[in-house]
Image: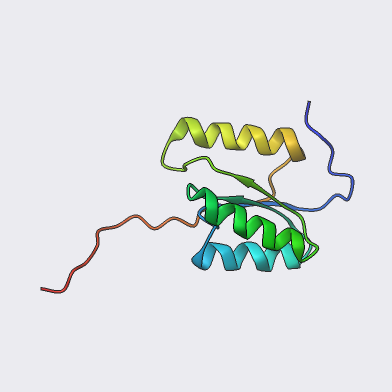
Length: 103
């Protein structure tokens, strides 16, 4: 059974939010009263971002599932629904591309 969200806050998942733009997005949303789920396969970076958000007085949790693996995406979504009861915002912050090297 899903836990309730007693404060009725919005829930956001931001993928690859342990660093860079994703981290900034997570911090901004959290500062606006949104409960943030920090997702990153870099566990150290993800935990650091989550801790910084919590220390600032906002709400966050960390999930390490890799978004390039469908079974892990499903697992993460199930965990979020179980913990919070809903997902209101999903920001897929993933860059997939080739490294461009100057010739």
